[in-house]
Image (cartoon, rainbow over all chains, first blue to last red; front, top):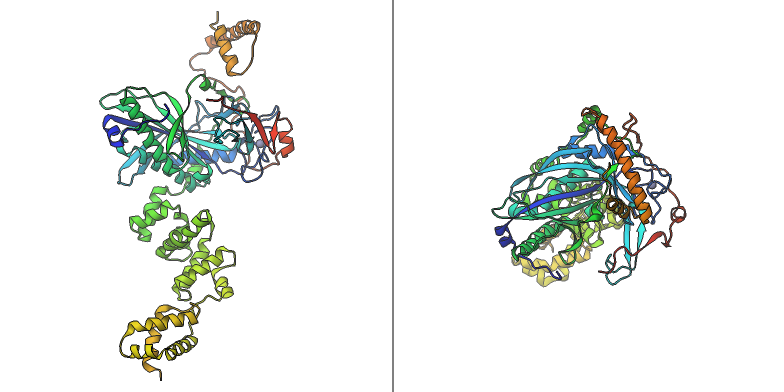
Length: 501
Length: 98
Ligand SMILES: [Zn+2]
């Protein structure tokens, strides 16, 4: 099918019930890879973090990273999972150039975490409990770059290049049970669920949890069941949906596409589909076939794991406050209305605002700066807002504004100086000479000069036409190079106009 | 007698990307059949209270600490590669033309 027809969303929901399932991969931020001591880091040159084990060379022998097990258990506990008393790794055998060993080390029938659930809250206030079937450990694949061909995609490429730095990095794959009863909320449930997983992983500190860097990746399973039927429809699996907005769009798209196919008398092929961010569509990948005969078997080079109950309980004690509870607490403490609070959450600035408040700033001022000027500058620079300034620096800047040392306009200049690495806000104020002139002496002199230079304006002010003061205020602000508080200038202009000889 | 068929051996050989001659397929069908039969004998003595065993050694929880050790140099890593481009492994086109 060259171009998929889509059914109107509401009509699709009228005719069919969507059934969902999600597989979310969370990349752990351990210092080293899952089974070898190579650094788990990117940005360094291609193939600089490899060894015989993660390259699958003869003689390579895997060793389990204890920290990765710990992180997986903590993640499982935060998802309300049971931690298996016995768990082991398995080989998932397949040939693909990004997998140097010709198998992925994963878990099959003994995942480390199983049977959990999380409850998410939709914007309408609807609560949805998502049951989690399992969370298992596995290692990541290398990174492929497809060369040649017209599109730069795998289709039509002349050849491909492989960088194995990511090969062997620890992942936890979280698999949900079937989600029924989603109805019209299906796309939002997808987005909110993935956001919740990301937030939990970030709160635990087990992952950098940046979707744009691939730390959290989602595969979305969608099938449709005709109303009145109790037979499940054939599902498709849309791979690598890598932003929250895309999860929402991909689920909606698949519902509309499948509904159109089924309504026209067609059948859904059980297949992997690819999400295209640019066009907002999915396209067919290969159908499930022989190639998915993975011949899982227990990994003979790794011993089973039997995490002691004492260790599990110790780790349970390290869990932070659940993100949903934390959000409720912070919103109440800060007194933000929903819109203000959502703005902070959606901009991923909860930690930044919290730390700024902890450093002494008022919550409203912290929110205003982070979601306003700093977010704007970050957007221009194409970086995350919380990488531009520290909460302590911002709190110091806010203090200068509240003490009257800086106007908002001057504070924005100081902020630029801080971001440019010119030092603390106070250092930037000193070095750039940006403080509001608080000694009225020079200001009064400038006002007198301006009033005497415009006698007609002076006369109008004395006649009670206070609007005329604007011309003088402008001249004074210019003379003071902007380093005066306009309200104070206005006050003094009126005062001097009455008394000046 | 085992139920291993030549078709199964062909299928496994395809999955493992091993090119077998007809004679090898015949021989392996026979050999694998004998292995399956032998394992079936073990199953006969294993009672219901014998847990499935993947690892005969009574060892668990063998972990290493999360400490970085030096990796190979890029040249070492690429030294066995059939082809390379810059610092990356170069592999043939993955998909046939659609
Ligand atoms: Zn390695």
